[in-house]
Image 1 (cartoon, rainbow, N blue to C red):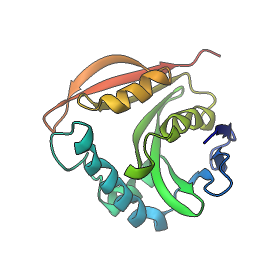
Image 2: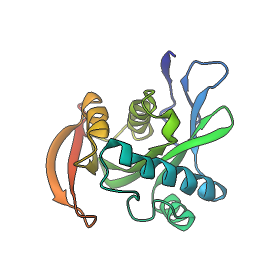
Image 3: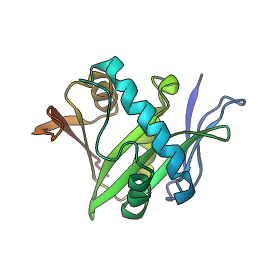
Image 4: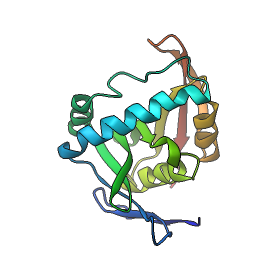
Length: 178
């Protein structure tokens, strides 16, 4: 499959990131009515991480909660990822300052991971906040797969913090020079 980056720099715009005519991928703002679906996908995605080194089933706080999804829609810019008309994932971005944005959480259906969608979500985030000069995120130390995605997208490790879940989180940043 060939990936393209036809995205708009305006928040809220639809985005097509796959040229597959049968299963086009797009990014749209999430709505409260999407919370149940997003929570269900998030649960499957995070619980699938046991296949990539997670110490057990589970995920970050609120990962399987529709109420958490709705709360994050109010606090940040929450997007849903669709393949054709089916929601297949989501991600939330938070403005931390005038020029800093945090990727708070991202998740995809397990069977659709490792297709380059995550890398496109990161590029989309840069276009949603074109004035941003610094993007930050964290990921579990055991998750080498996501660390690889972030590093390939130009993020660099800047630190490590202890997580309440009992394992360290690796902190990343990407600085944008404009």
